[in-house]
Length: 429
Ligand SMILES: *[C@@H]1O[C@H](CO)[C@@H](O)[C@H](O)[C@H]1NC(C)=O
Ligand SMILES: *[C@@H]1O[C@H](CO)[C@@H](O)[C@H](O)[C@H]1NC(C)=O
Ligand SMILES: *[C@@H]1O[C@H](CO)[C@@H](O)[C@H](O)[C@H]1NC(C)=O
Image 1 (cartoon, rainbow, N blue to C red):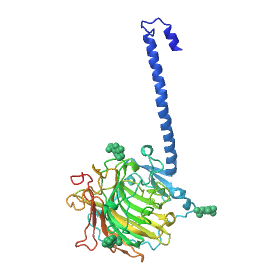
Image 2: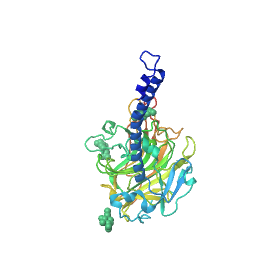
Image 3: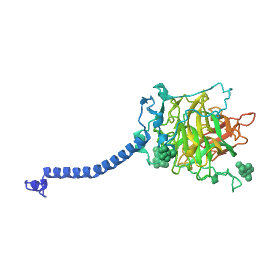
């Protein structure tokens, strides 16, 4: 042993240990320290790494072609019959419907505001996917390494919960809202069956203060009890923990149990059947609206189609993205019972101090100078398959000093709905 060897060397020190001896001891100590601590950390990180690799293998399907987008995304063109939907136990033998039935007619409103232009996806500047494939945004390793739960990656941790008017006389009392980590400002309709919903939504860059938070602007269709509902959602959002950055992206969501165990954003779990070879869910979009400048908008519609027994997602007048087959839902088989249009912010900081995460454009609903986020041409499709402005609507906002909602009814036969806010401000400290 070194130690024995060194004691035999005639030392200058009282303890008989020479300088060289002490250095050897020190080195030994460092080696033990390194093996002990670093060794453990390496094993832990290797395990996490393996888990992440396994998850990535489930999420990312083999690509026919891959496109590296300038915004850092990789878009995989995946054989349409190898897309994630086919991992769903009820869709194993599914035959893809390439087009919706004839029953799916969208309202086309000729009089679009002149300043409203259709937006496009950033990745399409770098290439396109061949027919017979679907573009899928590749899940990224560095994002999954940071996610607190791989099992829940892609799924909402919680929903905002809307309790319809049942026992209490005032369902809009915000103390009744049990979703403490969500703030919403929405327009809402209920009381009938809705087999479709649409809106023209203007698109903004929105600020998210903490990477664990997100800010979405969506159309929400729901059916079932408030603690266990089915939902389909489509819109845009800024969701750093999901996508790894703060870009504004096309976003969809579904669940059949209020997200307890099912559902996800985009194609991050089996469920949505994509037919478009042109649209990648979760991809960044541009151009974005500017305060006091041009406004850019997307028309979203979600419609149940009897011929294919599915809920179809369309963007604009032309683009059919794909569908959610009715068989993946428990209650939302052919109709929703509630439709909401507007914004939501997810944050653990909705008390004081409040998060500074924005909703919509970051401006309040009547800040005409800066320009709020809006939804126009709001439509539902009734049982009789007629598209129309809902029979009655009301606005619902849980934190009107932080984010608010305004339905511009006065003087409008087709009222535009404005909503949003900056979060933390002098009224919302
Ligand atoms: C799919 O087809 C196979 C073979 O015909 C059958 O055994 C299975 O039950 C089917 N699965 C579903 C979910 O319909
Ligand atoms: C909710 O309750 C209030 C007060 O009773 C009533 O005015 C309102 O119409 C109800 N809304 C619905 C959706 O039933
Ligand atoms: C973000 O939020 C989490 C959870 O509330 C908190 O632990 C973390 O410190 C926050 N990060 C920053 C940079 O504020």
